[in-house]
Length: 364
Image (cartoon, rainbow, N blue to C red):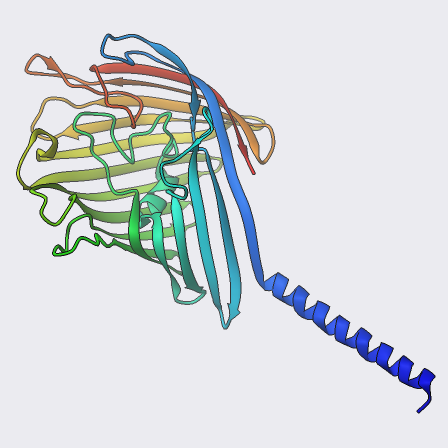
């Protein structure tokens, strides 16, 4: 074998080996992915009755129609219809640059998914009720302004939005979706403290989307705590599309029951929230949303009502301008005004409040 022949053969083998390695690397790259994503939502908001003295306020608001956030997510194909997945997501106060108290307080989970059987995940995550109901709120769970996840009344009624130390299952079977979640309290000596359990069933076919969720959550500081609350909610909601117009409707029934020592912060109550709304394109790249939330606080004459609406103008697929507005009112009870407000995360101070906002949102 001549030196020239040996060199040519070695070169050929080296080229073949390099080609195989590159092909394997490319195949691996195609079977897994990692992405960073998020959105920045900032705007100006004017709100009446924003302190105990009844003063109004202008503010720069982070998260007008969606909470500002950042995150990482990935998926790897394991073969046989299985994939490994993870999601890390944190909340951001974009008006100040501050992060949420927990770095990845919105999502921090890892799981395995089967195309035919569904997926199981462990960690910090949104509840199945939160995910199944979100598409059926005409305001989209917006801080400006929605009462679906939590009413801006006293006492505040809500279902569980996120769980820590959680286990979640999601499955898709034709037109039917199934979700289960459990948050383990991890309190020694107690099977119920700080726990959450939920189940959701969804149906999507043609113009119809519907779901039914049951959520049961309990809070307690320690296994020796004498005061805790048990919140149980059932939520039915759906949408119906009429061409480019969409109708939204839902009902959330919540009961809070004291566990252990009863206090003013642990009082029992029963409330039912109804919502009805619609959305439709009104011009090129412009969509309007609007509707009403009505809360029936059982056993009282107070029935808070909020009218809310928003308009989106899409500058591109990732960037939009928006305007929001809402007005909330509550009846008096025994001559005392029941407190209510337009902003779900603020403790209301009077029996009426109005808010308007203008903002810009960019997704990346």
